[in-house]
Length: 392
Image (tube, rainbow, N blue to C red; front, side):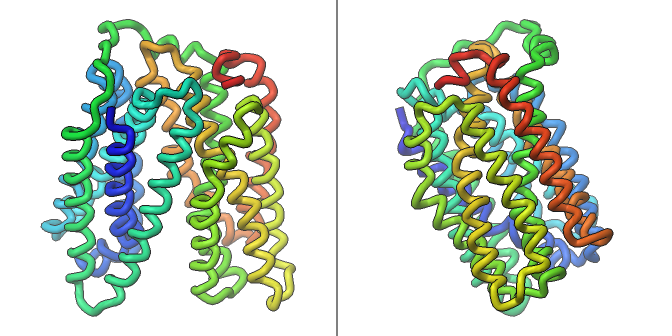
């Protein structure tokens, strides 16, 4: 019980995250007073700490149930956002950022198992798509509010968005506790060897590696395209907003319809299609360097739509494939380990973007090569992952 309430809770969480996450580095510099290199180091170190969470979070999901872990993750994130309000030094800033990173990893390790538990459908692609649309749109709305607030003078707008983020996590936790009622959870047995089983499950490990490549395509769109537009193509700042708005609106309009259209297509085949689209997008992005300036906006919007279609296919399909491929008693640990594909991508993406200093098109050629290897591996995964997971 509580599927709609869960969507409301996820919307509240994502709105609060959208308000604060885009201005985190600005908060570290303008409010706490760190220089930009130190702020970047704090963020990178906190992200690395977050990567330690999935094994514990996955274990707790299997022991306690996903809702308990998700509520705990919200409280940890609320503590991190609140810590930002009182931080005045590098150690305090690191603690705030680390709590947010740890809570965020706990969130993603538990939320998809909870969505699956609340879904009556055998195939979880559609519920994952609805959750993804909700989070994406609410994040975008929050980012828009942040842009309006932080345009004011002084540091009060930054403190306001940090406080709002903390409140959003607490409200989300309250909704989960009051209105979301999954079926009673059956705890896994202590010492059941699920992690050892996972390390020997080569198809699932292969799925994690393949998804790392696809997660990198998403991260390079979010982090790399703005750098490419401004520093390489010399595009005006408003063009970045146009690209992001196009992506958000496209997902809102077509995410669920795309999943419904693909319901009879094997998941690995659908992901291979997304891979081919992303390879095309990466190469087209590299080629933008030679597009005449008057045609830049139209060209970039067209290739953004190519990226969007790939993301529409990938986002719910990959998560549904990972959840369905996990053994019933170890879903928490398997799905949590699957999150490493996203976590490692978060760490690797800035390094790939830095290759722009060597040559502007190099990051996109590297991405295309990684995507090609991942897409080529999908037919093999289609034959080795559980058939019930591949064929919905």
